[in-house]
Every structure is written in C-alpha cells, then in structure tokens.
Length: 212
Image 1 (cartoon, rainbow, N blue to C red):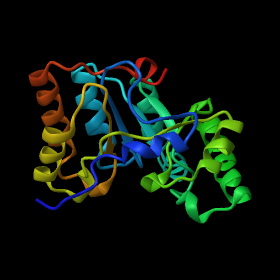
Image 2: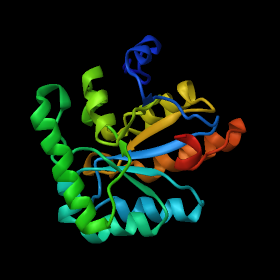
Image 3: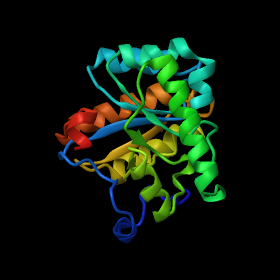
Image 4: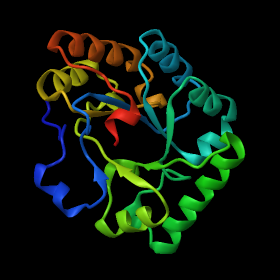
C-alpha cells in the first residue's frame, strides 16, 4: 500500500487559531469538497437522505453558478454549504486582494442563488497560511480543515478502505469529494464508512454538533 498522508501532522494545529481540525462533539462529521457536480451530487444526496446523515458540502463558487439547481438541492436536503473559493484557487498562490476577491465573488453568487452567505470555509488542496485564517475570520468565516483524508479522488476503493480502517476516530472530520475524480467509488466509499462507524460503535453527527 502506498503511504499517503491520511492525517495532518498533530503539531500544525497550534499555528492556526480559529480553525477546526477535528469534530468538537466526539461525533464524526462527513464533508464533501469541490461540488456541486452532475455525476455525483444527486447520488450522494440520495444516499445521505436514506441514512439520515447531514453533511457540509464545501462548494466551488463557479460550480454553484453552473449548477444552481444542484446547489439548491443540497440546501433543501438539509445540508450546509461552505465556501471553497470561487475558482478552486490555491490560497498559497494568492495575495490579500486576490483572496478577498475570491471570497467576495463566492459570496455574491451564493447570496444570489442560495439566498445566504456560508459561515464555513475550507481551502482548496488544504493549503493555507496563518495569515489567511485571520483574513477569513475578519470576513466572518470559520476555517474548517479535516482529520482524515481517504483519497477517494484516487478512484481506488482499496486506498479508501485502508485509510478508514487505520485512521478513523470517533471525532474525525472526513473529507470526501463531490467530483468526477471520485465518481466511480464515492457511493461505495460512503457505504463502507457507514458500515465501519456502526462496527466501531461510533456516531455520525450533524454540522451544528461537530463545528461548535
């Protein structure tokens, strides 16, 4: 098995104020990055609805603009939408004004299409500097990272199973992907997680519980 970085280094959290790395409730939170997506979003929503699980979808602004119906379906299904920048832009390559433009552009699209501005943010690729967090906080956003990345976008269910079997904890924030890259295994990945959660006696929480 190829050695991936399934979890961020434990020491790094101390450098990032006002950032959530793990669930604050002792329950597991499932999150999805990069949507909405024509191939995956409705399938994910159907499964989550079937098992009564609520998640945070960290959406890309231009995808919300392209797929307003799917975006509203996420909200109607009782899930939260978070800001994942407008263009899926890596923050480490942006200056202060460029980052502000990404946030403002996303917020305008979100307000026009969804009727609200999200309160949670996740950086594309998980790359972020401490000064970014301060700017996010100053714009009313809470930075939400993750504690378990199962690499579903590698489209290899064996990698996902390895990650979940070896690194899942009762307070994990898990990041899956609502994208073409994970389309081939996303439903199987979620189902495997649900089976493992039940087997270990863990509980899946809601965004409001896990991101206090």
